[in-house]
Image 1 (spheres, rainbow, N blue to C red):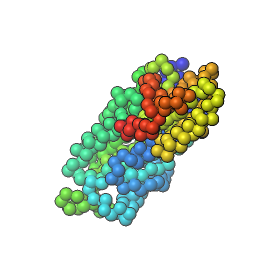
Image 2 (image 1 turned 120 degrees about the vertical axis):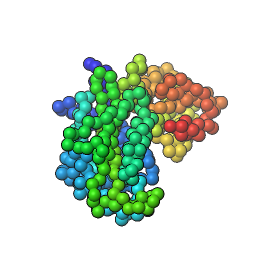
Image 3 (image 1 turned 90 degrees about the vertical axis):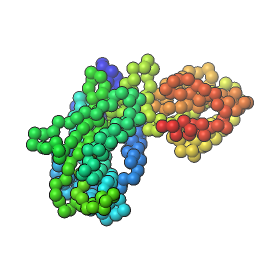
Image 4 (image 1 turned 180 degrees about the vertical axis):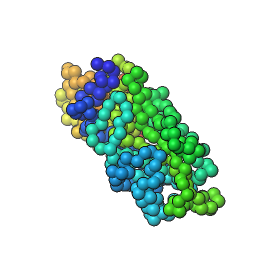
Length: 363
């Protein structure tokens, strides 16, 4: 079994994916949560964009080549919606975001996705004379974004996409952003395409600098959400560490914090439980996502459950675990254990959750 297959097996046992017939995969439980968080990150990226929500994607649109999208009814409808619903943003340059349910084209050898998927699309309408400048800037910004989400930023590369012979390089450009997994192969996580619009009176916007009416050049970014989710999950699992852990980005981890409580004195159980419930409430109100339905694990000192709990948390990608004991009731000190370093530092209970929030703000 190669390392990618081991990663897929590990992700399945942790409840992130599910294997189907014909070597197909689908997101499951924690993977679905992770995918939704990734989509939210995409929505937060380039916040000045006009968000058009979900767009209907006809079968003819879904089969269009990446360079011919500007001829589709969907693109025309989105342009009209920009003019109607976001008139202040209807100028060059501007951004349009929308997502569609479409057939996912898996052009990688690592996995196949079952059924239709969600395609996240960003259209950057720019001044024709600055199109290449914007295109190069968007490549750089997109690659940096993927690198920040990854546990191994060196995986990501920008690869030129060869143009069909009948297309003029002055009118069309394309690159793919890929995530590499050694000899196992690579996955395309984002496609960027530049299309210089033909003379068409249906597509005219004022230049934000000069006020001149121009036909914009379009730079389109497309991300197949499920494909990108699988790629980042593999990235978090394929780290070549001795321990089995999932190194997910702290912002995207389905659960950001866990609470493990070690009870060595049965008489203090109720007090420890009350303290855990209090911390659960405080952390939840801060907006951090807690592991476990109750938010904490209460165990006896003689058992092996604390180590089992930490192993389970690591496999779920939980970045931090608060470790309480009966000493916490006496001096207010607890251990904050990091998934990435496996090192626990001592903090005072009064510093929770501000201490955690400051850590997450750094991402």
